[in-house]
Length: 326
Image (cartoon, rainbow, N blue to C red; front, side):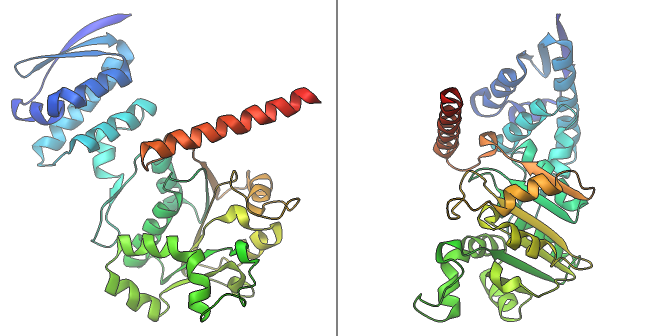
């Protein structure tokens, strides 16, 4: 049943709330299927009861945050509105006080989707988290951001970042250059995330002192990694044996995050991905959390989201076609 409600807001906050050419409010109207009009500093809201209650809470939080001197960009407000529409238990206050953090003082990091927020919370609350989903969903970047925060807040004493160098079969001897030259192409995305979050000079010093270590997965064998934040990236390209080896390296005082995309496995045909196997074996173990991302969580160029979705549909169509032939 549709109803109408009046809500009064501080006049100085209305311009910020509505955004350029009322884009913020139009976006909120579209998300919640409501109608919002303004008369002075009064808002008239038409819609279903539950949607109006959601808008009331958003406006209440907005007024409180605005009074406290918080600044809002149009993009931040629209990101917050989207997450609240997807998860009504979430609030504008949560978004601006809990879902944003600055790991090293260089760059603020914000969850841009419900799954990104759940991923951050899962890493905070668990010692082992799997982030599984397509490219561009922030799996690796957010894991590195959380690792940097843990290091700078002294929750851990070092960061270890690793990937399987599957393209070279982890036999890197034939590649030109010294060891660093050989492994850099496989580990470059992790370097990029680090340098994006921390000043270059600081990262370089921490790499030299091995406070931050970046190495191929094969180099983890035989080690016990205590008091560390460990990230295994591109985990879809591990074998079952490699995944077990990695997971059993975790020592006291450590956290581990495993990221991967099970739709982009580069292992030889017939070899099962260690990430797929880990889902089956570990899915119900207490203290381990799996966060599964989708095309809705892609935060790169909008074309990336469309490409991911198109490939998923193509794979589904092929699978359904094969099922029909049997």
